Length: 185
Image (tube, helix red, strand yellow):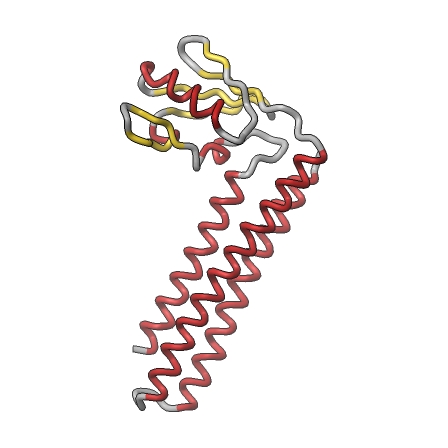
């Protein structure tokens, strides 16, 4: 039961780090990347569909993204989704591909993005700490019920703290990397 609790806690913490990575990838930096479009939903035949499922992406230049829809009839819906997004792009359509030229980031916009990155990083850390709290409660309950000894419970809590610190440090590393990427002009 104890091993199961620790395994589940580690799995959930790793998932929180993965979510943080995805969130950071969707925040725009000075360079164009397909990750910016991860969270974008397109109204495709009345159903919200992730843009990744409808098109392929190419980045021929640092601030240009070429989006090639698999289904040409979805072009207008993709263009509308891009215009309505908070990416600040004005897509142009040549009949086969949609070209998005990303505007240069202003210093003010960079600071907004840094605040957003910090908020998302803090959310990930809170999620990791919540997992730790639930696992600690489970360990305490096992000790209270007499299923494991107090020494084993204490040892498991120390292991849980080490696990938590490792995952929080991973989020901090991702945060610092994204922040330096945003500050790089």
